[in-house]
Amino acid sequence: MAETLFEELKRYVGFTAGDEAALRSIYPHAHPELTRIADVFYRRILDHEGARKALEGGESTVGRLKITLVAWMDSLLQGPWDEAYYERRARIGRVHVRIALPQQYMFGAMNVLRQQLNDVLDQHFLESPSELRATRLALGKILDLELAIMLHTYREDLLAQQSRVERLSTFGQLIGSIGHELRNPLSVIETSLYILKGRTDKDERAQKHVARIGEQLGIANDIITKLLDMIRDKPLQRSPVDVAALAHGVVDALPRPPGVSLHFAGMEGLPDVPGDPVQLRQVLVNLVENAIHAASPSGRVQISGATLDGAVHLVVEDSGKGVDDAVRARLFEPLITTKAKGIGLGLALVKRIVERHGGTLGYQRSSLGGAAFWVKLPFGG
Ligand code: HEM
Image (cartoon, rainbow, N blue to C red; front, top):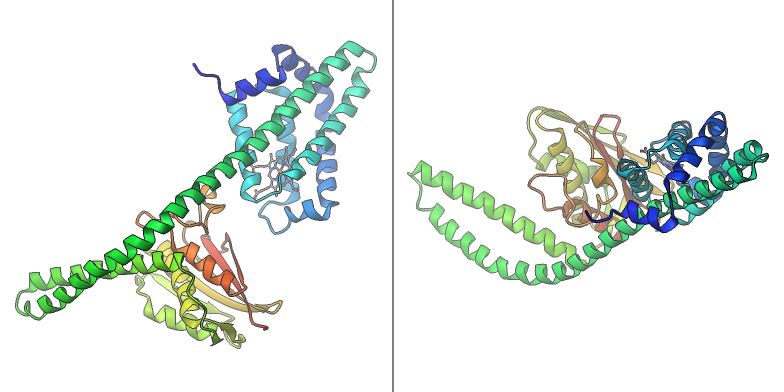
């Protein structure tokens, strides 16, 4: 059987059964210290203005993270250092990648653990230099392995990004030409359909099918429009936009099942945003459509507004299932979709439009249980 990455890494650092035994011999001495070490670890992060940012605004509290770090150190010293161990570590690495934690902080963070655990070794094995040396070596190797796994998850992410970029540049060129080429046959179908419509007056089944073809044509045209919008940045036609009126207009125009209720909060008195009303409408259409889809067949969608730091802050949230962890980091990238029938352009387009308005957007869990997408659109200048 081919060597796994973890086996290869262990071979490279020379991690042996002797190291495993040495780590296990550290455990009883380190165990009472682990909570204290976790405190030192997070204190160091909180003391650093850059690293601290990763902990702000996240869903995890430092209290919870300390518990997970103690569990991490528990298995660091007890093993078994097998493939399941590797997978667990890689999963943790991907959590850091998902929250876009800059990888340079990993070295400093690992060093805190190295120093703290080495202090434990100094205290307990000072009388026995050979044990001190063996445990120090084993600790060094496993912490290097941990760093290697962590950095590997960043590399995985980089490679995935690269292949997406390549896919997209070819994709972009293809879309441009295919999109344009498809418009012609679709418009011929549309004209013929219009003529046919006038001749099916008395045939109900034919009428039904003509209507169905019309609907599907609409969907096909819509996909092409979104694709073309993605690749050519339409210039913004700015004017003062009343976002609340826009949101009400969008809600009135979008179909929704009777079981999905729609609510507005804090939308009165929001300042106008200097923006392109057509493109901003598209932002709201995509977000509200997604929310209705997520809350269907029965649930709740809420659109709320507030003024915050010179920007109109809009939140569109739903009582659906929320976004899967695996998709979260890539949510606003093209071709990423959570819908069975989606092609993954809606949110990418939303991001593009919001950013071209100088705004920002993001995702968080909604208190309604599902997804909450927020958009900040600056209104000053
Ligand atoms: C030696 C380095 C590190 C280790 C061993 C480590 C360990 C862990 C573990 C075990 C988790 C829990 C993962 C899960 O929920 O399954 C976690 C999550 C997290 N870590 Fe680290 N971590 C390290 C470095 C850092 C650094 C340097 C920061 C910040 C500057 C950081 C910030 C976070 C945050 C914010 C989460 C929670 C993410 C979320 O749940 O949304 N970690 N880490």
